[in-house]
Length: 182
Picture 1 (tube, rainbow, N blue to C red):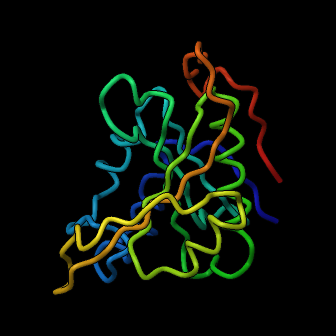
Picture 2 (picture 1 turned 180 degrees about the vertical axis):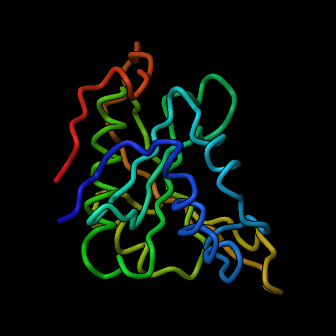
């Protein structure tokens, strides 16, 4: 049975292990050096941007997180989402469950827009985001150079709430009644 919960510092090693192959062997992530557990734990410290893990039989199989889309204040209602799964979790619907839970949480936090930046080609990620209501918003051409290739990045956008003249400020995930998901 799988469960989705907030990530804690004790998950940092498992998260780093899941992320490492994406950094070291693919262009899915534009990082060139995989972060260690200490760096992952430091990244998880944002008071407004949640990190979730999915676990099965006590083993972390994947994680999803949000981060600021841009640092300027007018962007604060927009977040960038990320999701990474261990090889053993792929193709089982776990990614859909995990990203769907993150989107639900971000909605409760008062975010208005979620953005996914997908390095191309990545048909699996595009299919996942499309199934969850993200729509293509544009493509940056050749913006990343990794593993001897220039890579395009496709932006996918999902509206989480209506755009109003007085949006409510984003709330920390700790303020959201967010039970463990089984």
